[in-house]
Image (cartoon, rainbow, N blue to C red):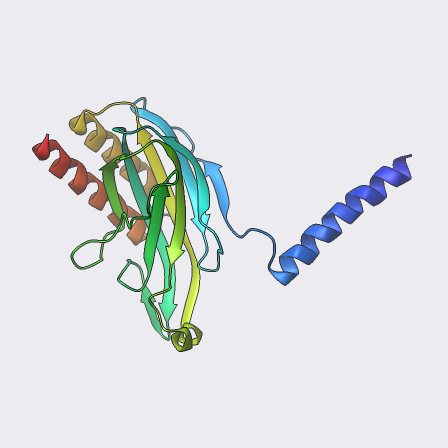
Length: 201
């Protein structure tokens, strides 16, 4: 009996590694963020690769009218140049439920690494790394590793509280050895957008 269980477990691992080798296994990872301020309802960190065939479910459910923030850090390179921000070629694409896709980090010059928005629909938040604007022949010139996307759903719609919580999270990440400059920039971008939303309300 134990031998049968052992062989079944071995077969499961074997199938997993074969799927990984042929590229059928999912590349993305979704995990909960650690300690959070009391203003946060939920937070997830999603790693999305440029080779994903479908949009990735972030594990975050949004209610229409709910404020949320997205902070992202990318690993994109073209030849000897490294891109630490998003542009018109490399976009983080999102959708809520079955609503049309949108590009939350696109801006006038596509240099945003973070934003704060109000959910326009109910549903799960899906993500993808958009690379389709790059000509196929150019893909060989580009190394696309992954995008780490930090999603925060807020319990409050008080923009001053949200800005303060983002600032504290930024300071916490800045003290981490793993923090990248583009991630810190993303928090700044998300805070700037909170201030704009506060003025509009």
